[in-house]
Amino acid sequence: MYFNGDGVAQNYAEAMRWYRLAADQGLAWAQYNLGLMHENGRGVVQDYAEGVRWYRLAAEQGLADAQAKLGVMYFNGDGVLQDYVLAHMWFNIASANGNPNGGPNRDIVARSMTADQIAEAQRLAREWMAAHPN
View 1 (cartoon, helix red, strand yellow):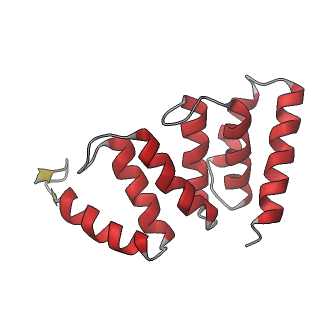
View 2: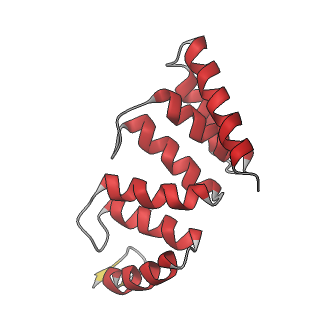
């Protein structure tokens, strides 16, 4: 058991069990939380690739926070090969779906990209959004 800074007991094994049950039933927020647990090593050995896998499942369901997390993972190269085009794409999608950090993060990654890369990322985002209507 772990106590956070507020003195609240955290039982990551129990949280993992419940999130896994909900995630296996397709609940996007549970999938996102499993991504966080794997990314941060909470209740499990830290595994960025497994975090990406759970974020992707939630992102495919339209969860903007998971889409933004995928942008971060691609920007940093955590669990995936670093790819600014895919980072920009995911931040753009997250922004379109209401994540407040998506737009600012997209603009940050764009500073390290060529005009052709930005155009490719925008094309990929449009195609993804067309294939995944809300």
